[in-house]
Image (tube, rainbow, N blue to C red):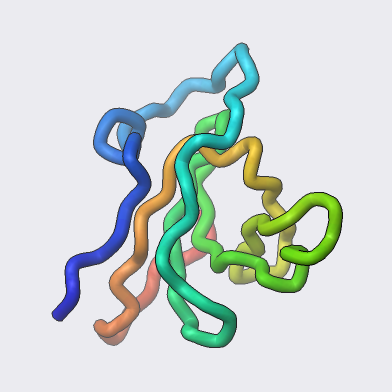
Length: 98
């Protein structure tokens, strides 16, 4: 099984549970994936919330560029994501929306 991808700061920020007071420029990069590959990622946003989401390729040619889309359809802007990690979807269960 291939190693799951994670953003550069995932290990430093995975246990953060408090809201951030300062904005964060987006510097976590993008995972290696493409439209239709079905990869799911756990996101941590600057408010401390966690979401399961996919890269939203529908927005890539618009002014805002790539963003994230939760499994329930909510758009999450890349500028509020402070860390992400790929979710292993090969098992019988997937992460639920948090």
